[in-house]
Length: 165
Image 1 (cartoon, rainbow, N blue to C red):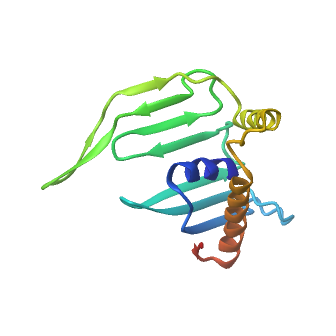
Image 2 (cartoon, helix red, strand yellow):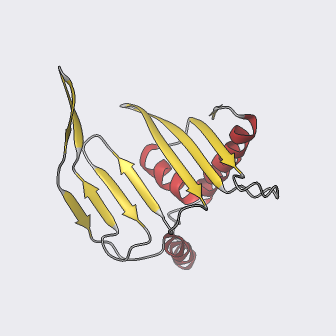
């Protein structure tokens, strides 16, 4: 969840509210949860922005996707693919007197190198040490990730939405 929330934070800011559901669906009872759903709310100039992070061990295939849905463009990044890793979609909804109309626009493949995200992040960290330049993900980003992970545990344990400072 940390890498995903770091990306979201770099685009739209800090999380204001968080709700988490974490379960040991297999009933192992060893403290190892196997499914997690976290809802993140972000206040923005255009209103509330909502993000969802989902993770579990039950998918029959390895999935590592980041989907961002915007008002004019959406994007899906599939980190398991070497080709067509990032695709944008110019789909949108138009509001009119009769309600909403869904418009399907073109899909565009964005060329990007097939790099495993954690490897890239660690490589950038090592390059920052060698060049003495700031790392893209600094200690503040790590602290924010820990803050959100701890809040998710509290939210799940107490069964409530947390408002974050």
